[in-house]
Image: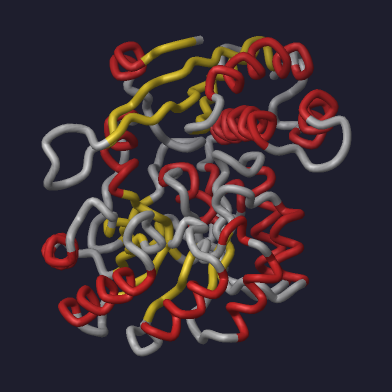
Length: 365
């Protein structure tokens, strides 16, 4: 089996939130397909940034580098890709996004060729993963946050995540919103927070002190740029577990986090960090350091496989801002049931792409 073609396109997809009739925003995603000489096709995806450059890199730069290689020979493929995307150092940005998109397609191909799911190729620890629901955005006021939380709990969810560090609110209002939600939902529901790197280290410390008694499961991306020294400082001043890694979560970055004892929970996202091959390296690091492995950043149906595949996998993220898009992009996408998401039975990522949606949302490629 040899790689013969890569097709890539850019799609502008609407983001819908509950309680809003119109899209709150649109985001761009790159979708790619890798075809082999035997007619097998695997797909991958990456998101949001410099998408036209990513699509062009896939077809104009990476295809010539990997054409005629066996897609299952991942080390050989990445050696070729590495020459193109980063002459030295760690690849970042559009380079890394293109490599991620390609790598996901290769894993989809490998699974289809083997008749196994990607989760099984990674280790096959389980065939489902528990879900946490990212729902608590700055678009909602305190009472709306409570109403939505109760709706999700009534629907079977037991793990929720709110955003803090929202521009214009400030940490005292964030603390008040967290306390309001925790007081309404009780202590039996898992409640996590995500600051999207929105705080200075001093404000992060202040927030953590203000919500110390709110039983917060973890605080994700708490400080600007996920600065390792600031994470160390914050970790010394709070018992709330710290999590990071969705946007710059390649294995070298995680190694630095772990060697400096800066985080508690690893959150790789294969759409951004180099793909499932790189996520596998992160998973092994997590096992070596005896840390839990989760995910974040809106790659539910890809990340599901690494969370389910490894025995230290914990929760997969379902995200209000990507849920509508993901469930419509894949016509047979599984939906959470009783707080769990099941790995599709079909090989590879186990998903069928909605060709009509791709056609209607295509803007380039």
